[in-house]
Length: 456
Image (cartoon, rainbow, N blue to C red; front, side, top):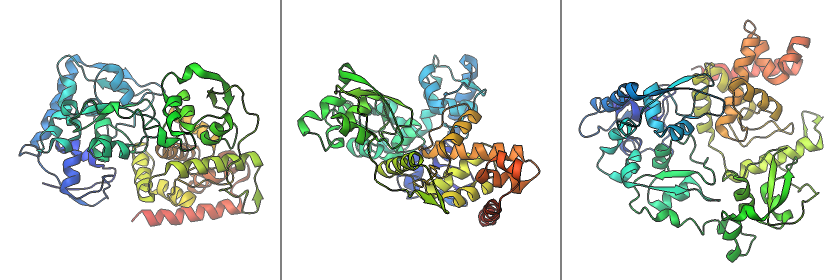
């Protein structure tokens, strides 16, 4: 059968809806490893075991049969579908199917979720449709039967693991319910689909060595090994401009050791005010490491404080080091998040385009970060709005923050579109007290012009 892509669709959603699999749809349509699709695109939907529409039945049946042995969970701050799946001994796919979720990543505080039971094999049911395609390696959820598990070590990425285990990025993303192929963290346990060699996870032991080229090769694995916390020599509070690599150098240790000691993600992202454990050193540095000047100190005739500009440079360096999604991927993310949060996708795209041109590596001298150009204080407000901590460096969290702020501003100014748009630039308090400044009015006019661009 064929399917026309609708706004908000992803390959994983289409696979779940039709009873096919991500890898099968990717192969049938010659999609790349990111499985990118566009609205209006016609996709071939390969059938599972000779049937397409009927193969969705096991998913529906699993959700229905779960009702008897299921429990109900009220989402609290910090909860995610993957966290709940692990806590209740079920799977991301089973919770998504049982609750008809559009995305495994979007749940909100106070939401009541049905958690499928585990006693009657309910959690295995969502995996059945994906196991039918002939090539076992390509069926992402089939890893339950033929795959392996892998604990992420410092320096590893999804693409590195896909190459090592002879599978694909999209298969690992689908098997683990990841929202981005880049966002995995040290210590995370991943299901590796289609891998016949279960002992393979033992191989990552030497992998930390390439992540610390400045250290002698023989000693590189030692700091990142689990006994490292025993050698802690104190703590350090992160300052504006700090990076893990610069701190590691000043402490006479390695970046991988700092990452391991503090349970940081593979991107090694840190934030001002964070307390870090110092591995393998006896003193705490008093000098803030110097970061290369990537962000200027002035913008539109205004010069920003040195601490703010230093923080902006540190954030810019971190984004460039870890890599960011493409502009097309960020635009698609803005559309999806806006729809799921009840905000006009046209408005959200217009703001994102005005702010950064969908470039998540953008950082301003005011330390406005990412696609939606959110400053840290506004990020804290957005975190309160959605009920969990938002990391503005994370592409997905950045978009959630920007869209949450847009939603709040349009509730503050329900009958004045210009004020609601302008408040994103000038601040709601400033607009309420002084109206729109001349440069704010120019911003409003520009955003409204972009809205016509994205409304077609």
